[in-house]
Amino acid sequence: MKNRLFVPVTKNLLPQVKERYPFLYLERGRLEIDDSSIKWIDSNKNIVRIPVASIMTILLGPGTSVTHEAIKICGNANCTICWVGTDSMLYYATGLSPTSDTRKIKKQASLSINNKSRLEIAKRMFSFRFPNDEISDKTLNELMGMEGKRVKALYEEYANKYQVGWKGRSYIPGKFQMSDITNKILTAANTALYAVILSCIFSLGYSPYFGFVHSGSPLPFVYDIADLYKEKLTIELSFQLTYKLAGDYDRELVASNFIDCIQNEKLFSKIAKDINFILEGKK
Image 1: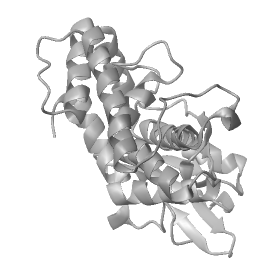
Image 2: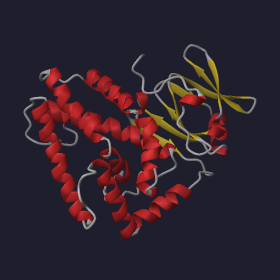
Image 3: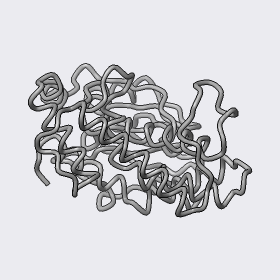
Image 4: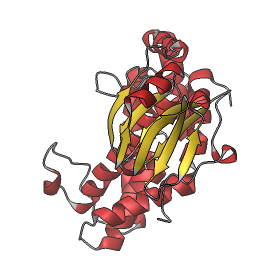
């Protein structure tokens, strides 16, 4: 398929984080061992050696199987395994090895529970999206109020741009079909974005459970990071597709256009640097 999120991997294509590569996505094949090394056998019987000691996370997509010994080798190499949907657009589970490096999670947790550092990082996230707003004296609650107004304004802006009727964000959990087409696309695109970012967060050695703007939700750090990219990857896309689809929701078209947006925005090459900037304040 030409619109894959992940392409055949070579070293020059992998975004490197220090001495390890964040992730490798595999689907329709088998992960097993051969002479104490990991090999991947794809659906066409091609064999690829996988340097698990150089990879932080392997994302296993549809049609994959993995042997007990392969998991054991990955665990010994501190390579996390995630089970995901096609192109990592759904997220199912993670297998964490007992030798996982927790240094990044410890630092993230300490920043999250400290009120001063949490506010500083929340301001950095807000400035990342709205660089022209003055927020030096704002509290966290004031930032959240400003964000709500800005996002509402973005909805209105793109509704006018694409000449789409808009009555506001509305989603009833478990009742997807009751939403209008724009809200359906928003919900589907947001869900896909959360899955992609969740996989990336685990790949980079962070936790989805320690957030800075969001709290009290299942995956606060995922929602924090997703907000950095929603304008182009979900909000504008939803109004653009509403106009294009003329009232008929098409799941395959939504998915393919979302993949195109991910590729055009070069999300996977950005996200490691952006998270580092958000948490460290360094480009």
